[in-house]
Length: 402
Image (tube, rainbow, N blue to C red; front, top):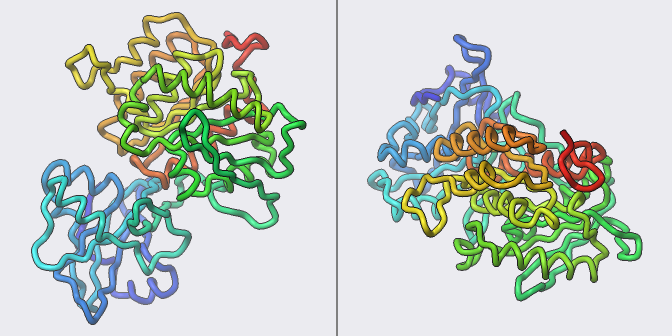
């Protein structure tokens, strides 16, 4: 990636009116890349002293390096601000703009939190926004032409709609998405446990994804348990915590079976998570494979050490998979090529699971630690693990086939 404080030619205002922002053009040196120009138009009543482009993970890398200069837009003769990036043609990222008033913000955590609170979506962009939590503004989404398709992320007309109910199990808030026509007597239903359920349910409306997948025959009608884990207890819950995994296995899943007719078969049970949740999903399949037969990990934090270790990059769970008996579990693991802090550890886990003979689907997407990417990968992972071919890697006894 490289950025330039320029716009692609004098016709860019006419192109904006027709195409919206960002403007995407060919890279004259390499057809695998695109030149992507973001454009910001000032409010004439409150002109900016500068504009910072926040392209998810792309900007973060330079913030961690202590230099935001490559992401400051340049004022154009027409009065707009513009900045061009050279990005691979399969890149996807959420993005926002931060109008600078006065001096450019610094790169400390406190500085960055203020930037995130004040950042706004691109008003010139076309397409749906990516919602945010905690009162923050939504993001726009850049999806270059070769980025993986995401046909299941948005609500579609003509699809039978399920419903989501709010409940509590084992002292935990669990939002339950039930498929269209759900009747416990018609079970057992496959079940998917989604960690950070308040993000997936209340913010991203993941029930639409389940409904779309079901309507297209990519998964059978399934019950989704959206477990809330984003509160103060998240670091403890999502850190290879056996008590939390046992709570899900021994209390939450039986509760769902009793009330909603979900399966008790591990082959039709998925646990899914992102970041620390991705780590926890893999750990659940390691610790309780008789209950969690499928783990869907996105951008998992596999650098994690347990409390007995002093090396923060020790990759404790990966070493358990390498040394322990092979579990009767299947895995869907994905990570972003832009996740420089996680990519090596996810590749290491891939190599260990492959060497140990686990059924594994491993993917790398050209993006970052970003729900704009994860919402598509979640649908792909559910289809792989629960879909018509989902049992191909598992024998009738639940053991991986060789």
